[in-house]
Image 1 (cartoon, rainbow, N blue to C red):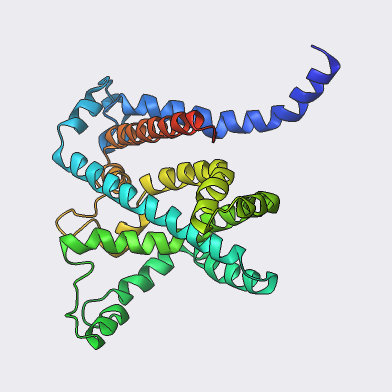
Image 2: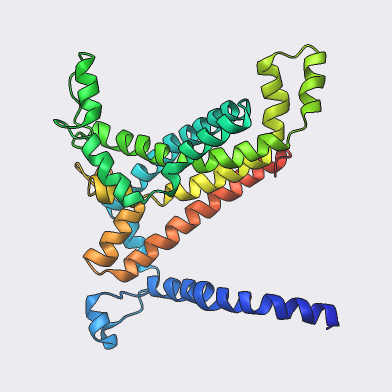
Length: 293
């Protein structure tokens, strides 16, 4: 090895060692755990531990609640991700047109929900969505609309959680997209106006292509984050009503820490990882074809 390569490995070595010890090794051990029937009895006595191969995975595919959790999670992602990115993009466009002082104030105000504690804010929103005493239903009643059982009706529970999650998280993507807007040269907009482009044409042919790498980044981050839905249903609905808000991560939590089926819980984690990884590759593939990656 050359002296330069040795210097590079010397600087990268500690970080790689930390990643190996605290990430790669635990991931490998978790995968091995998913191939066993590790449960409360095996935790007490390792002689009760048995290797079951992919038995946990086949058991999951024959569990109706797992499929229900998977469909709930996909519903959350399919609806929540476009809403979150659309709201973030709209807010970024509005802030981009403001003066520096106003933009700084609104950027801070809109980003504030991101840095708040999720569990604490979820508890507050649970009271805001209360059927009898919540401020949201109070506002609806003042408009002559009957109160809605937001968290007790299976048809409204997941939309309520989606609305809360979008409000909580859109500020993060907004900051990224706002930074992307500031990197687009103003000369491009001036040239488009000279060519007779209206606002929509400027947005379509200048803003969106300029934001393409940022949109790919926020879509991947938002999708991966929304697939890991857990705290919202855990705090607000406990997976109910009638399992309408049970997510894959909530199902994994119950299997691992309520029923102590740690082998099954590890299998759930790896199935979720494969889903997120596959969808990320699909997004990257389509973005590469459009030249956004």
